[in-house]
Image 1 (cartoon, rainbow, N blue to C red):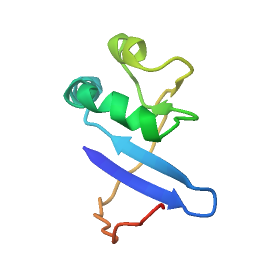
Image 2: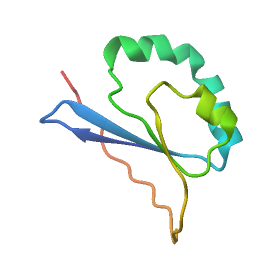
Image 3: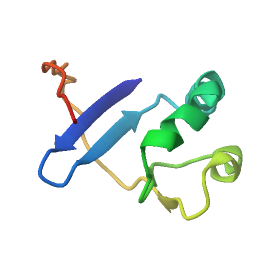
Length: 91
């Protein structure tokens, strides 16, 4: 699993990029964080969700309405790099 956040401080907006081995890994993640949905939506608004790759029908049914699905075509991944930054205070 890859899970990184990007922050646009001027717009008070964050972007989350998640990557999973396969559809089952994504479904497992969603099941594991189900208890966090309500507190998350109290402080954040999701404006869009895009899912890239060949998702199973089960993943498509589990996503929020309006989720955009894009099928995999081609690509190369050479190296995964972990980026660590200090926490940012949004207040």
